Amino acid sequence: MVIKKKILSQIYLEPVWADSLGAKSFCTFVRTPDVSILIDPGVAIMHRSFPASWEDKEKWLAEGYEAISKASKQADVVVITHYHYDHYTDFEESFYRDRLILAKSPNEYINDSQRKRALTFFSHLFAMESLNLSEVMEPPAGSDYPNPLRKIPHAMSMKYGDYEKRKKELLEKGMKWFLARANKWKGYERIPEHNGETFRLGFADGREFSFGETVIRFTEPMFHGVEFSRVGWVVGLVVERGGEKILYSSDVDGPIIEDYADWIISEKPSIVLLDGPATYTLGYMLNRINLRRAVDNIIRIIDEVHPLLILLDHHLLREPKFRERLKKVYERAEIVGIDIRTVAEYYGMTPVVLSA
View 1 (tube, rainbow, N blue to C red):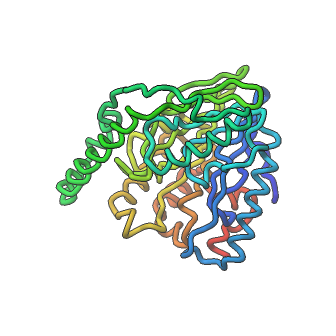
View 2: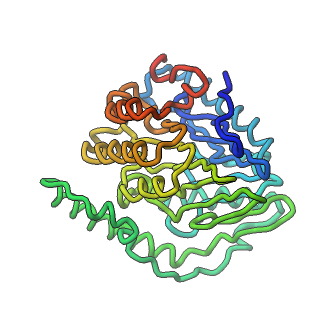
C-alpha cells in the first residue's frame, strides 16, 4: 500500500482495513504523542451477493485479519463501538492483553444478539485473569430508560408527506420493541468494568477519557441506522489533540438520522470517517426516503464542516453502484473542494467492488 502523507500535525491516522479493500471492516488506527488507539479491531467476510469469487473473499478476509493483527501490536487502547463481528474479534488474546479496552456498554442499549455475543466475548476476556464472568457479574441496576426519540428532536421534526402515516406506524412499533428491550436491561446482571493485571476495561457510552493532551470523547448510544433499528445501538467517538479532531462515526448508516449529522457538524472535525448508507440493501432494508436523508445529511456535513478529508467507506462499498447512489454527495464535494474518498483510494487503489 502507498501511505498517504501526514494530514494533521498532532494526530496520525492509519485506516487499517475497510470494505473497499474486500472484507467487511472499518478498523482504524490513530496515534498521538500521548497514546495509540485501535478502533474496532474486527473483520468479516463479504456477503454472497458481493461481486467476487468466494476464494477472493476468503483471501481479503485473511489479509484484513493480518493487517488488524499487525496494527494491534502498536495499540495502547482498543475501542469497541458495538458487538458485530466486523467491529471486534472474539477472541484473539493478543489484541486485548495489556490494553485499556473502551467498549460500548453490554448492559443497556443493546439488542438480544449483541448481548449474547458480548457475554461470550467478556467471558473470554475475564478468563485472561482466570476469572469466571458469572462469578463477577454485578446485580441488575433496575434503571428506567426514557423515550430515545426525545434525544433526536431534529429527526422527529422532519416531515415526509405521504410517508407520514407509515412513519408514525413504524415509530409506534419501534417504541414497543424498545420498551421490551428496556425491561430486559433492567433485569440484566451487569458485566463489570475491570482494572486488572492483564487488561483494563471501561464502558465508553457518553464518557470522555484523557491521555496527556489527548482526549477521546464518546457519544451516548446511537441507533445503528434508522430510528429503532433492530440491529441495535453503537457509540461514535472523537479523538482530539491540539485543536485537531478525527471523528469516527461507527455504524450510523449515513448518517440517516439528522441529529447524528448535527453531532458531526457541532464537532467540526478535521477528518471524518463515515460509514455511509447501506445501499446494497436498497429496496428491502433501506428505502428511498432514508437514502435521501443520508445524502442530505452528508451534504450538510460537507457544507458546514469543510473537513480536510472524508473517508466514506464501510457499508457503502458493498455494491458497485455506490457512486451513482450518492451522486449528489460526490458532486457537492467536488464543487466545495472537499477531499472525499474510500480507504482503498486513500491508499492509491481502486475499490475492489469496482475491479473484482
